[in-house]
Length: 353
Image 1: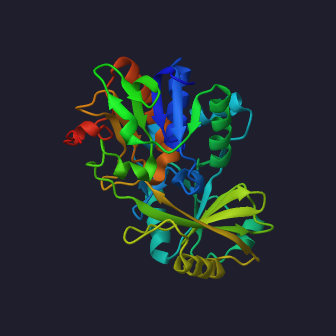
Image 2: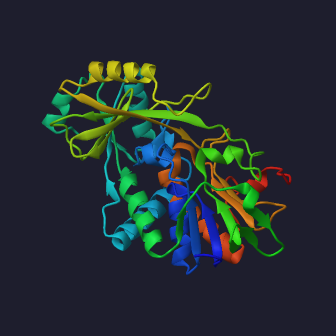
Image 3: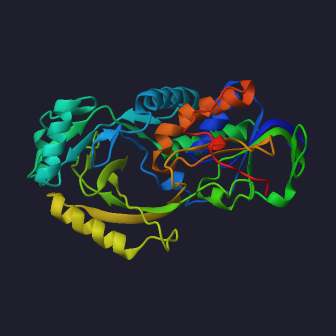
């Protein structure tokens, strides 16, 4: 790879860097991915859930009718390419925490039943939970195996001599009129997919990043059906075998990426009030999400340095948003097609660093 020229250099191999490099390589672009191997990167501790409805008002997630089919299509294609399981349908059983939420869901189903139903639960699931206010099933939902996706795609990049594990050094980056130079490499363009580190990027730190901390417990629950996701005060998401991911929270101020005792205590309290079967906490993980104040992605090329771009800001929706917008970013890079008005960085006034 020494002294090689690439079409695109991508910095970061989380969800965004993975799907963008895949989309570009599908279009026969020569790609180099540089990643620092951060074990606490948000992509490595995220649940991988694609949920089409959100919030107390039970509304459709932004652009879900478009982005969810695109995400499933890309993940299924990557499954075939990598020969490993990456995505499966895994519907959410949403247990209502109160009589008011039970009524809100009932009213919502009467108004628009898309993705929502009140199908009865199998007896084994009904017996595993305290559910005095009933439930609603959200269908379809999908679960992305992020560990497989990130690991096997990295192996594919290494096989293709398209990967370097290193900390990116901005002092080694130069922007020329029609290309960039990084260390011993040249490329037509460089795209930053750095996650929460994006707030420190000298070219894009003016964007309104608002990273937040998320945490989860890894909990062994023998006998709980792992074909579903369970949601109430917390979400219980299949992880591996009888181990479930249980979370998460949003911590906006004074956070670090270390697990906090208060989260663990609060989550155990929630499980004790909800689960009727035994469980065992086996790990506690935490990381920083690349969220922002607008809850919309940051996608596009720098207005001054035309060969330097960003693909970031997906927040908690990376699994659902990244594949669709990776294809859009690829088309933008290759054919100058427009990026969605709510996702493009052209909506901000960005100056030279």
